[in-house]
Image 1 (cartoon, one colour):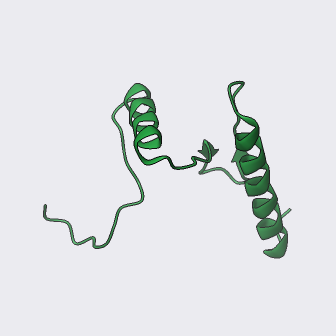
Image 2 (cartoon, rainbow, N blue to C red):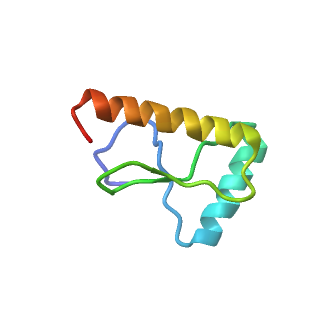
Length: 79
């Protein structure tokens, strides 16, 4: 209520992993969006995590994201 932030949020914080999974699945089923992830952040190098239940489309999406990350890191002089 007293926040000075403006605009639309692109981040949702959940209290537990179970709550986050429920919310994610609910949003996906209600909106019909394509989710990409999970993506591990906060490390020195990008990491892309896939699970055994990932779909073919999910593998293609994560592979494309990994390629963009690799190109971006190479362009910025990273290893």
